[in-house]
Amino acid sequence: MMSELLDPSKRWHKIIAFERCAFNLLLEHDK
Image (cartoon, rainbow, N blue to C red; front, side, top):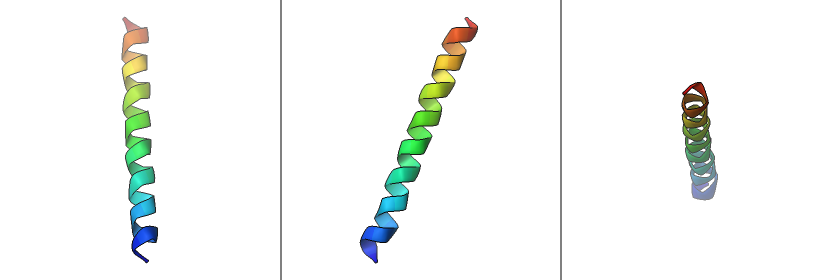
């Protein structure tokens, strides 16, 4: 049960990091 709760949180963390990277790339491309 604990592992099931930890897995989604890690995936969510990766998604947030990916979105931040993509957002930074878009900002740099705008410049």
